[in-house]
Image (cartoon, one colour):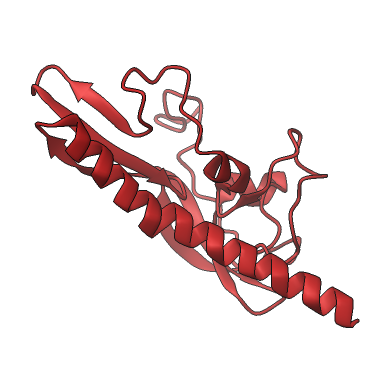
Length: 171
């Protein structure tokens, strides 16, 4: 095997050029900035919208449209809807993970820094929102980020779903 051909996790370092290939309703236009350390692509959907998707999500069939094709719950093994690598149902539920020790999503205690850290994950990226002396301030920072990222995304998704339902009713 070629030296350094695979990373320690078993992932190939060779970048596959997907430009021009079709995946469902998506046509790959060009490379995009990596998402979470993974290769991503800018794609144009048959509806005309552009979206970004990871190589694996395209090749596995996980991402096949910009979201205009409606929820893929029937196709998803767990009945979940993913758009740009983001699970709509998980954002809606706002559940606190089992391994969370603070009780607030995205807020954890950093003993080495003697502070609370706030962060949020969205579309495959983790955003650090800052370190805070007070727990309440870290929670507020996280809530503001949820409003800006998660809630905006959910509103846009709901609007798309309403558009699709209306156009289906008009047909």
